[in-house]
Length: 432
Ligand SMILES: Cc1cc2nc3c(=O)[nH]c(=O)nc-3n(C[C@H](O)[C@H](O)[C@H](O)COP(=O)(O)OP(=O)(O)OC[C@H]3O[C@@H](n4cnc5c(N)ncnc54)[C@H](O)[C@@H]3O)c2cc1C
Image (cartoon, rainbow, N blue to C red):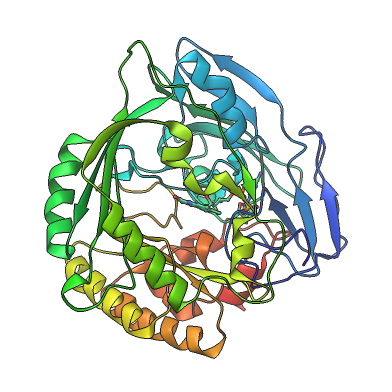
């Protein structure tokens, strides 16, 4: 499998060339007729970061700090800097990312291109809401200094723009103040979806971070049971517990998926039964990034890889749609250890193609079992489509183009901002 695979490892797409970028002042390389595409850390699950037969612009060498104002929490850096590196720099100085996805192994450029969201969407919106500006380098050599007020049309096209409007070379972020590296976390178990909706409505008013884990293998009266967690950054206090990060590695890729109906039911059932109502301090690493504790955990799914299916459905249909999706998934015996349910708030996203919108988002991993898995996705698509929902391109490796067009009504406006020298496997799949 090439290093240029995406996180789900379903698609292998060998680029014709890989160019490591190191100098943000340099012009873009000439693709000699082949399409260009920036690549951060390949933490997108599907093919938005893949460019078969094209030129990959690897951004990890664009890793310099430009400026950090510790009074205001404004940070400027190159676009290949990762969220992990930012946190290492700023947390000891009393700042935190305003929005973070569920892994730190993401570059600033990648976070902008997918306009990523976190557990605090209902309170803080998406990554772009805290992005003060960035430089966009186009293949004709133009450099656009974009902010929400300067070149607002290019700003809106590039946040959530799937890397297609050009290369983001540097960005300026507004960070959020924190007293320390800990969160005050409350965990509660719920028995069904009705209880989830009730808990969630209450928690969203009181807590900046909320998320639920669902037992997607549970059926009948247990369907929709799960564990709800809400959190806020801990206030200043003495005697914080010590935290030492332990990282393990999945050292090899087994020939078949270790996630199967048997292991799934056993793990999910055990997790739910063991969960208790508790309130405790947690360091930010295990709270926000539990999966980062096992390097290469994606290998667990074996050589055939896995898909993530992440949808959002609007408030008017979300209760029925989420129940239907869960029923269909449980009946299929497929699914994963990680079914995540979260509601998005009402802050409109800033990108023409941003995924996050008001409603409920459900995300699940599925081992790639070929036709059986595709058949399940087709059924899930029917539910999402009729609920007026959308799938997340950052996680997608198979959505039908007509569902993309239906769910992203500003697609037509977006196409005029695409750099003619840029392309991706996702874009060709959607717009061929
Ligand atoms: C365990 C895990 C948890 C996750 N949790 C969440 C979550 O909670 N919320 C969420 O929203 N997402 C989540 N994600 C998805 C992840 O945040 C996004 O896919 C993110 O965009 C990956 O960043 P990357 O740097 O790896 O970029 P890549 O995956 O390499 O690329 C993603 C896109 O960004 C473009 N790009 C990268 N750098 C640049 C640049 N400098 N200029 C222009 N375009 C660029 C690429 O062309 C591509 O289109 C998760 C992923 C994993 C593996």
